Every structure is written in C-alpha cells, then in structure tokens.
Length: 391
Picture 1: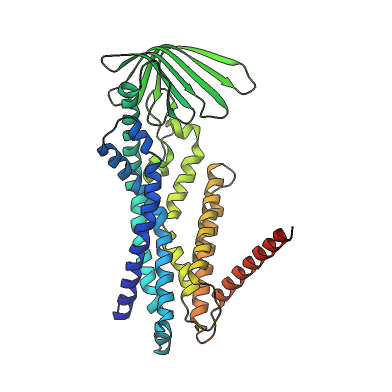
Picture 2: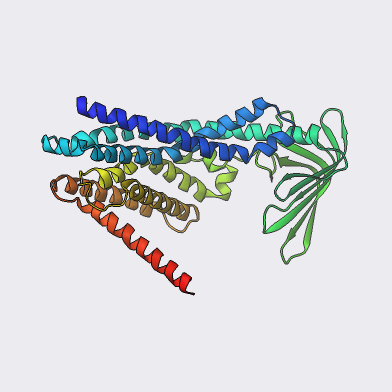
C-alpha cells in the first residue's frame, strides 16, 4: 500500500479496535453475569468464574467483529469527508481504490481471523465451558446443597437430597425437571453419586415418572441411570455433543452413529453452512460502508448520518442470514437460498460501489436511495405517532 492507503488503513484499524473492545466487553459482561449465580451458589472460586468467562469470549468475537468493521469504515470515511479529505483525493485524480483498498484489506484479514476462531477456537472453548459448568454442578450436588432441602439448580429444575455420605455418595435423591414444556420428568433414586469427571450424576435403584400434557403418567423402573450435568438434560451414557461443539471437519463428514446427529441431522447441516458463510461477513459489512459513505458529498446536503444507514442495513442483513440459516435447521429449505442471498447482495453492492465511483461530481446513487428509504420510514413513524396522539 502507498502512503495514503497506509494512512487510511491506520485510521480504520484504530477505529475498529475502539469500536470492537467496548461493544465486545458489554456483550461479554452481559453473558458472564447470566452465569454468575451458578458460580456463587455452588461455592466456586474466582478462578472458576474467570475460566468460565474466558471460555465465553471466543463465541462472541465472530458476531461482534463485522459490526465493528462497518462502524470503523463508515466513521473513517465520514470523518475524511467532513475534513474535505475525500474531496481533495477526488480533485487530485486519485483512483477510488485508494479509499476502498485499506477497508477491504482490513476486512479480508478479519475474515481469516473469524474463520479460525469460528471453526477451531470456538469448539474448543465450548467444550471447556461445558466441562467447567459440569464440574460446578457436580460440586453443587456433592458438597453445597443442604440435606432435606429443595434447591433450584436451573429454571424448572429442582433437586433434593436426603443424606450425603462419604465418597460423593448421595442418598434419597429427588429430581424434578419441568424445563421442557411438552412433558415433565420426575426422578426418584435410593442412591446416587457424581462421577470422578464431574459430568454425570449416576442414580441407582429408582424410578422415572414422565407426564405428557393431556396424557397419563408413565413410570419406568431402573437399576442405574445417568443424568448429564454438562447439558442439564436426561441422557444415558456419555454427554452428547451438539453441532455447535464440533469442528468443521466433523460437520463436513459427521459420524452416522453420533447420537445428536441421529436425532437432529439438520442441526449439523445448518451449522456447517453457517460456518461457511459467517466468516465472510467482515468483507460484506465493509462493502455496505463503502457503498453508503464511499463518495464525497457537500456539507450543505441534508443527509442522514451514514453510520445510521449502514448499521440499519447491517442489522437487517444479519437478521436475514439468521432467518435463512434457521430455515435450514428446521428442514424448511436447503442451503441454496442462503448462498444465493449472500452472493447476489455482494454482487449488487460491488456494482453500486463501482457505479458511485464513476459518478464523481454528482451525488452518488445508492446513498440517495438509502436516505430516501430512511426518510420514508421516518415519515411513516411520524404519521403513526400523530394518529395515536389524535386518538
């Protein structure tokens, strides 16, 4: 990159970091606080809380990065336009690639980072988070819960222990699980214990009462039954790994004997295509910013702040991709609509950027369209507010 491109890249990168860190911190703290009761109620140390918080961080980075990119690119270009730097670049006869290249180089680097985190680091962190939660619940059952007292473990999940003896052995177990709205599960066991790994509560000599809405209660007697603490769901044997816990190689070629794959094969398909598309979002969001704020304009024009337009389009774009991925997961449609939407929108944005680059000296086409759409939305909201006020 030449001197001007390096200057623009440096400004964009600094704004990217300044946008990423506070937004990521806010979302991270929100997610961590949702789990703080789990750590405090089970008597865990600050080290367990720090480990749980660290494991959560990689799951948030790929989601926040594209929005930080669009904020950084838009704000950089808007500031340069306010300082008349874009007009000077145009007057000097420089190519528009001088403005586009730094943003796209930064977005391309972040695409590699997003792909690496999403496909390699995030599955490892999810496994670590599950093991930490499993150990926390194991300690909660084996040492913290008071005898002969009901204790709420999770929303709709209650546990009572009659007696605790040495060797992590529990007697008189009662577990009520009503988290699934379709049925209620009640477990009785004469004796139980948490395994050495802390991931499973093994119950012996007991019964399972299952009640489905509008149906009678079914009773199952068992000699031995395992309750998975890592996912807080009743299951036999080892804990089942979900699609989000797998790496991309397993998603591309899943084991047909995997229990979760047998139960929900569409989850693996949706997760694979999500991993193959989400990593490209930094470039897509950079294109949105270049499309809206990449052309110089006069300060006398009445225009909506480009940052508002870019964020509105970015959120709408992200919501549509979520919707299309959920359709794959629910088996409503295949991956075709998701890929078609991404390819078509990126091609249209590249065409709009090229069109704006060849309309120097006049107002760019797409920013005018975006401003018009936002103005129409504002007028509709104002009319609704007037009607409600008249009522």
